[in-house]
Length: 117
Image 1 (cartoon, rainbow, N blue to C red):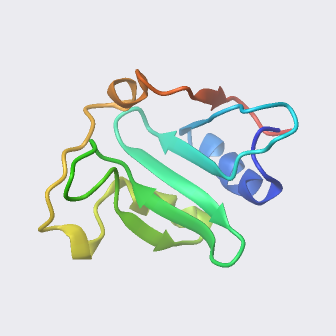
Image 2 (image 1 turned 90 degrees about the vertical axis):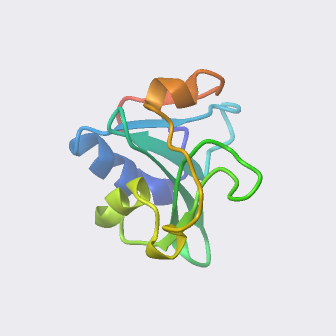
């Protein structure tokens, strides 16, 4: 598997919910601590942190004032969908969503995760 063991339950949940899941394959002996997930339109990101667990973030077009996404926070895996919307504290902050997954991924080196064994 190309993600760490702590991400596997989330990846299974996302795949079961018909989400597409992506990460980068660095090498055969290095596992990733992060994934992107999408329903084709909305894009979310999560990274595993050994202190806080699953940290979720939104994904938007990069800009100088708000970067590339807003941290939503540590969430249980079943609340992954919260990474599809700005957190309440960011509603007045400027950000532009990607039109869809393809517009985001066209310049990224990501690999789709088809299944977890």
